[in-house]
Image (cartoon, rainbow, N blue to C red; front, side, top):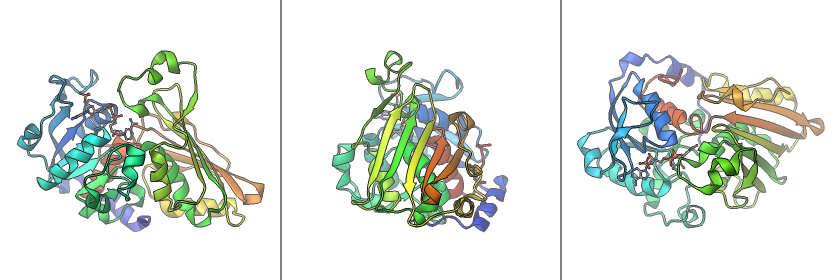
Length: 355
Ligand SMILES: NC(=O)c1ccc[n+]([C@@H]2O[C@H](COP(=O)([O-])OP(=O)(O)OC[C@H]3O[C@@H](n4cnc5c(N)ncnc54)[C@H](OP(=O)(O)O)[C@@H]3O)[C@@H](O)[C@H]2O)c1
């Protein structure tokens, strides 16, 4: 498991002078998708970036990434066009299978890849057919990819050729649970009840995500077979046996994730112990805010921001807790976390282009 970044390193990273780093040539594949458009908007204001190419799927004509970004034009993707743009870094905001196929080719061409899909998040190749529906053709890259939960990454990001940006639900859950891992009782179920806005499913058309199905409605989905479950289990080091219940829900809102997490501890914990455990990891993390004991965060605190907020309430004399964690799925759950990773990789201030 990656260890939390020492506070001193984070302070240094946050204070790093922006102008010192040379500009990076960056391309974005999938720039017209929900997370890709967010990423494009952020990178367009990044002082250390030359945005050299933006791509949509090969079936789409040249046009704005979104109507809100009329000057940022995406072109139909071809590998030749991408190579011709000579990017040093490529962000993949593409479906899992597309990233799985593209990333190895880009690495072979000497580029650095930050992948927002799940194609390189699981360490065990045999899990891909079950959870993602395809055989992984590059198992070695699963061992090489750096899992980019930024607050838990250290020097490995600086050496990374391939970063697997975490899933949106896992980001909300792992930020809340990893600081408390040492005290979580693995004999009791860890229950993660997560609710996401509809943009979490991307812009593909599907009747389940249509306005008529969602407006005024609220429903659970993917129980027992959601592909974020093995990712959460892997990153919490729960193994196969420890009981983890992850239930995703669709909220009738555009964006945002709220995870309500129920955990038991091996021994009674005080509010101060929990507060200290979070502070050890997040004291100087620019995008994670832990609320005072007993205060619980709400979606509106973080929607349209790169921040995560975490709150907790102890129960049963400190032997259990309910923890609530909120993020914007398209930002901390995707695009802004990818930029945090990029900033760390290339010695920009972690907050560059994000605040
Ligand atoms: N949405 C979220 O909250 C979220 C959060 C974390 C991670 N992710 C992951 O991030 C990735 C993108 O998600 P999204 O929600 O942004 O998806 P999306 O809205 O469906 O957008 C997908 C993007 O990929 C492009 N694309 C599709 N097939 C392609 C191909 N063969 N070659 C080149 N480009 C192709 C699409 O182009 P067109 O516009 O031309 O179709 C579009 O720009 C997915 O792997 C998803 O699991 C999403």
